[in-house]
Length: 115
Picture 1: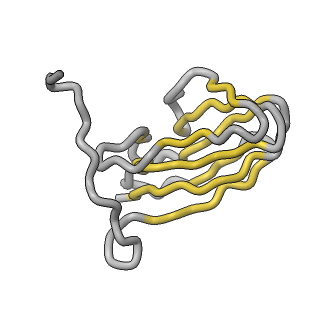
Picture 2: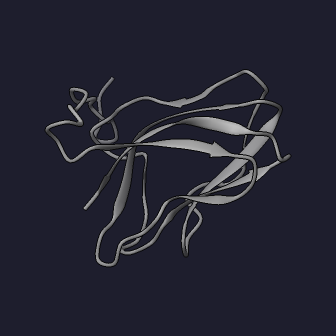
C-alpha cells in the first residue's frame, strides 16, 4: 500500500509551547466556533464532538462549505484524530462555522492553528 495521497500522523503538539490552540464546542444551533482574524487562516487538526441527541453538522468557512451534511447518532462521538495535515482549512480572514441540524446540544473540543 503506497501512494502520494496518504497522510502521515505527526506527534501531538504541546499547546503550551506550540501554535496549536484548543477550543471548546457547546452549541445547540448554528454558530461560529472560531472567529476569523484578518489575514489569518484557520486550520483544524483534530476534533471530538458528541451530541445529546441525533444530530447533523455541516462544516464551513464564512464563504465556502467544507463538507456536506455529516450525521451522527446520540452518544456516538464524531472524532477526527490529530494529524499534522489539517482536516479543514478556511480562507484568509474567514471564521470556522458549524451548521447543526436537529437542534441537539453538541459539545466537544477542537485543536487548531490560526496563522
